[in-house]
Amino acid sequence: MIVINRIRIFGRDSMSIRNWPETERPRERLIKYGASHLSNAELLAIFLRTGIEGKTALDLARDLLSEFGDIGRIIEADYESFAKIKGLGIAKYCQLKATLEIMKRHFQCKVEESAAFTNPELVENYLLSQFPQTENEVFACILLDNKHRLIEFEVLFKGTINQTQVYPRVVAQICLKKNAAAIIFAHNHPSGDLTPSDSDQQITEKLKESLKLIDVRVLDHFIIGKNQTLSMAQQGFM
Image (cartoon, rainbow, N blue to C red; front, side):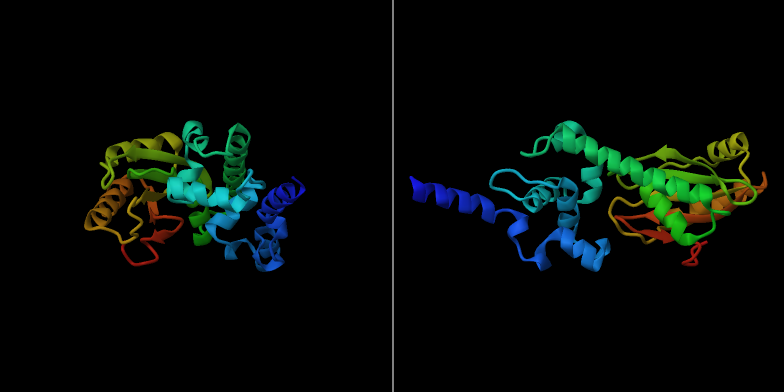
């Protein structure tokens, strides 16, 4: 009986991340190398903090990624889907949603503190934090005042898996309603391919011409992929 207990206890303890070499522990790796050097599973493991019997936090993180495919889908998961995985419940779900909201508010504060919304890196980070995670195309905009300060981020149109119908008249009405002087467009490519399509370029030009009539400048059009963006203005597509 004593031997059996020792084997059981050793097996349980050996699963603990605390028993791993320091160079392999996610928290120690984050402190030493920075968060950007960690894998998705390691970042999730730090968020989850603890595992369950027979599984470390890293094992649970891998289960999440296996179930949902990527971090974006995990973040947008509803409670029922999230809690299907053993060891995950309402506490960790609420913690995840609260972390996401903190991140969004952080970038909102950065934008509000900025003298002007003209820094490409700021725009990119803001869009990645605000843009809805979805398998369908979404067309949105950042409305700006005459000093290029943020008025509002707004989702304008929702479409199918590979296209969205965009109506310049509706865009013009929103600009007038919000008294916008400039605008940045953004839409996602669920495939992850950031290459602008012919229709992307055509609708951008159409919107520029339409909004010119009401003195609203189109500054850029961003394409959102999986945790990355492409600026059509910077890449010479507009």
